[in-house]
Each structure stands twice: as structure tokens, then as C-alpha cells.
Image (cartoon, rainbow, N blue to C red; front, side, top):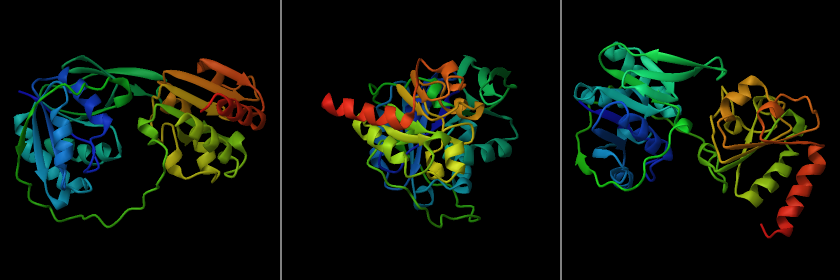
Length: 313
């Protein structure tokens, strides 16, 4: 029949993860439709309509979808499910929240964090913190899938899909949005940044992360951290990159004072270029790094900042 991609957005802008999920959906079942559920989200719908390969954009504009609360999203997706062979969402915090509910209600197994579409019913996904790739075949019937978007190219903005307004589903009334505390930064968002500078336990303290912030500002980069640095209280947990944090795949990942535990590698090893700075030449991070510098980070990072300044960055 078709694939339905649930858009990731903030009611103002369409996230790049949606464009990458569209690429995966087109390999499973066509045509591809995109569901934009939000409040005052016309700009998001317009952006989704431009994605190459999208035939139709369905827009559910209602206050209950403003924050993608799981239960209202579940009800909306289920109201549309009969029309689709496959339902996909990016493997983001939101997608991981509502899509398992959809799979449970449809009584089908969810296929999580696919990295590759082998055929319309066969997929590759990571297991054991990304140290092995599992090939799974879905049973006949409807497929519910989350997509690890770092593994797919974004669909281009060359489309011109039709936009259709749809009615909101009945609110289950069993949960509601209460509030949120968002960190604000002038730097790029971690999961979409082209350059990421991350620090680990070797930074020694949260105060020392100012060194990385200086480097990140020169490179227009996002700042990340290993779990060890987060657990030590150096930085907030929204900085965390790894199996239990955020998965990133920037063009350049600079790992500073990070030993390279398996859990961290699972979140960044798909980066295009990996550079590591560590005073321990036996650190596991050097096994996957494209460029490695065995040095004291407290000397090397300031020198990098000075050189970037000299070059006009």
C-alpha cells in the first residue's frame, strides 16, 4: 500500500531526521506519506512537502500534539494505520516514546533502529552496543520501525507533495503535558551538528570543559561528553553521546580525554572523520580514530584554539 513517516519537528522547523527516515521508507513501501502532528505547524508541513519521494503530507493540527505526548500520538497513528504497510519514525526520544505503543496495539513486533533496508521485509540493526550487526526478517503484515537516521542520507528538498488536513483523533485523556526545562545554547544541536567536540573523564572537571567550548566556538561545533564525564557531574546529561545517550554522525568528531569505552563508541563511530586527543597511547579510542594525537589535552587544546585564531576562525 504505502509507508507512513511520522515527522520529527518542534512545530516550527522540520528536523533532518525526518528527511533521512523518508529515505528509508522509500526502500520499504511506496508511495511515502508524512504525518505532521503538532500545533500551528504549517511551516513544518510545507517543509515536509518539499522532501523528494513524498507523495502526500497529512497534517493534524491540534493542541494535544504540540509536545508529541505518547498517548495522543498513539491514538492518531492507529487511526491511520490501516492504510499503510509500514509505519516509521526516527529513533529519537519522541519516536522511541510513541511508536512502541503503536506496535503493541497492532500486536506486531517493533523493528528498532534499523541501519539498512536489505529488502522490504529484511533489515539490519545494531546489537551489543553496536559491536555486531543483526539481520532480521519481519513477519508478514504491518511493519512498525524506528530508524537510526545517522545511517541514511537525507531526502532532497526537490519534491512538491500535496498537503491534506486531517482531523485529530479523540484524546485518550490519560496523560497530559505538564512542562519541560530546555537547555539553551547558541551552538548547533548535538545530533544535527556537522562538527562535535566531546570531552571525557580526562577533562578533570566541569570547569575545564570551557576549553572545549572555546574550541567548539571556533569550529561552530556542538559540545558533547562521554557518560563518565556526565556521571562525574562535569556537564548535564543532554551532552551525553553513547549507547545510553545521543547517537551522532557528524562530518568531524573530536574526542578529547575520552578513553573509548564500547558504550561511547556505539554513539559516535559512524562519524565521517574521528580525531582523538589522549595522553594514553593505549586508549581504545585510537583504534577507531582516523587521526590520533598522544598529548596532554590541557596543552594541545589551547594550542589548537590559538592556531584557529591565527587562521582567522
